[in-house]
Image 1 (spheres, helix red, strand yellow):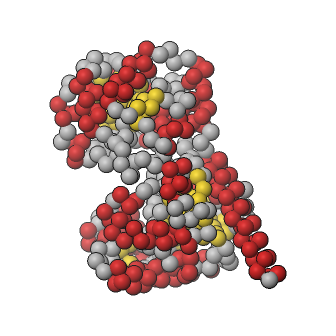
Image 2 (cartoon, helix red, strand yellow):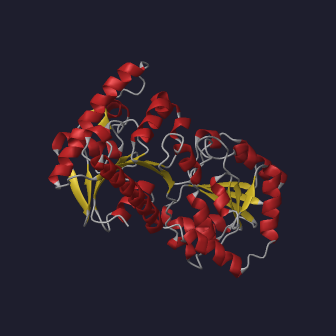
Image 3 (cartoon, helix red, strand yellow):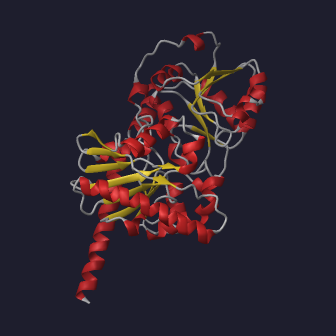
Length: 409
């Protein structure tokens, strides 16, 4: 177990978002036995104009202009830092040479702020953990005092144009110089080993306690929908979900009602799904209401589209479905192999339809429900940090051995 260490955490997930975020929960778990400095992303020049009404941007601006909430103690051993600097918006500079020059300046500005906060708290040689952000943190290993430098990958960001622009060079480069890489899935760990052999799958933590409850009253907007109900909870994004697959299922199985909980992107809003009488979009719900909906689904689905973004993605919602005791039908991916004893895995619409038929007819025995529930409940943040700690111990031991051998020579 990592303990009595000073840890700096920086990346793409700001502190002022929902509690369910990966990096934030990792910080909370690490802070039980360590001092943690959590760095929020600074505001960049373009955001001052384009996103000036965004609550997070407003918070960052108040920190820069008025010194509000710059360094805040959020918990006993955890501090949140809002850097008092504005970064230049350089991502779309076409020249790699010029981008690298300006990106180094941005990194240096930010590192100077982080070093100030670290010294303010008395951090000496902290462990630094970077969450996915290979742009703003590319030079941190050189610019910040550190005992160990860890790159944490939980999404394949190069599938997105913004990150791919310079990420084809920077992500592998940062992985290579990191002391180790931690990933939240076996697929991403395998991907990272192309650039750094010290890459470890530390798993994914999930908070599923609210889904384990035995009884929830049926929500009013779900009560009028006839069973069987095939349900999905989560953001409805075409980059992650297969609209054509859903259209085929809804079209071929008019006796099933499909219910979707979550915000829709433009592709979903304009899709044929809105023309079916057996498809219902119930909109975004507060997180604390989601267990009630899931408890009243007959079958839960995770109809991912296969692309670079999703193929290595860890599906936290599957843990939530299993914790609620529901039969689950999901798209087959390498990451989903770990769920194969508890869910139906499918590769196309026909397999989905057959699997849902089986799930509806299957007597979901108490033994099967408990097995799935126990499996989901084993994916805790404590387990994630235990695996991270084992990897850190191995890397630290290797570094110490290397140092000893050099001293002997």
